[in-house]
Image (cartoon, rainbow, N blue to C red; front, top):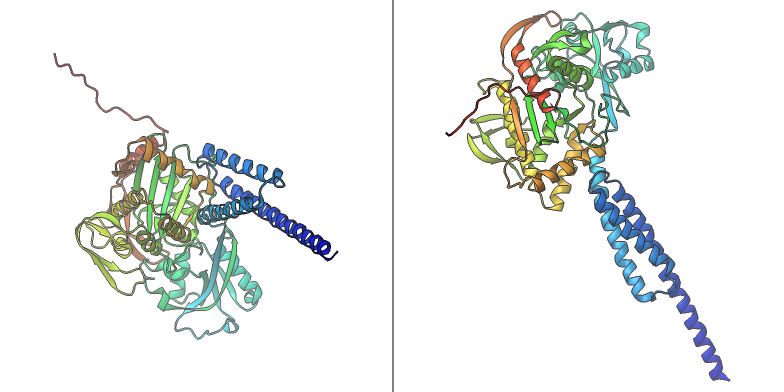
Length: 520
């Protein structure tokens, strides 16, 4: 009788153990399926990258899910659990890798931008705190679309009731407003908190950071609405134009506002059909009609004070082209990007020296072909005073850096290095290219590396265009001084415009001369 009881208990325990094992078996199957669906979701985010291959992979993964879900009762529990553990690890690892790559690329197009406005006075002013701001003349731009210079400034005025006991004076020209502050015509003014960078290379305001003092500032993060892409496709398949803007920021990121000098301006056209590009640098001091200032002529770099839209529209009007995209590059971020690439190989035209990225010391590079690290590459990108043609030659050197970086990117094979590059790019670039449009460049590079018998030379043909012109001192009434400007030659503008249009397939190339030859 006792033996029967033991046997019944043993059978009961075995059934219970088997039931628990089955539950564990089912649990692992469901975990594997759930993580697999997340992996499939991440794969689907890759848009234009290998659509056929991704479809096949997703199909195989779904078949595995279907098989394990409907056969779960008939599968041997031990092997099934072991397989699902491996399957789960595979799903998590794959989803994590794609997620990190996708999220880094997705963050290049900054959806939100932090803006900041400051109320400043001259350093020797008796005004110390916001409560001291009474019976004063306060300048403010009349550009109602400017977030930094107007919108946030109006919020500060309303919050502190500054319009009750002070005279608020509207200005059309920011440089005129600053000049009046320096000359005592007004007591204070509202301006983008990025003013030290905006004006550090503007004659008369080079030392603005030490000349003025901030009374109060306000930050605000809002959705970016500036200059949406004019492309009608989610993939870069047609010839397009992009404006590269070098921003000399004090911070190692581009999450801040868009108002800053266009310190480096390069217009690139690219034709994905012919794998050819044109690259043209525009001198920052070019004297051009500024679109957002009623086409009044000014230095092109000053268009950056009024935002990206103003800069792009001014260049479009000058060269009679449409610019679909912009890419802002933080000069300081160039240091990290070049270092992440492992350096770049460049032919340096002459010995050059300039401040390091922190402006705390000097760095020099020698003439000749060499591998430059990040700080050395920044010397080549920044220096213009030691060059025969100043900004013209500097623009050409910046083109050399871009070509060298593209060249180096084609050699990247290490996954960790790729992730490091993407992290650096996501912090120091901003663009209106969508994530799918950025991902579609994969197909261009794939074609370069597979169908053009790429052997490590130039990845595609780049026609480097040069503008010509001459320097001239021009009197600026708003600043009450003569400033050096670069007057672009009209024929030069027409020539480079034509070359860009040909590459964009907007115009047909013209045969200059035809001849025939017969050996007989």
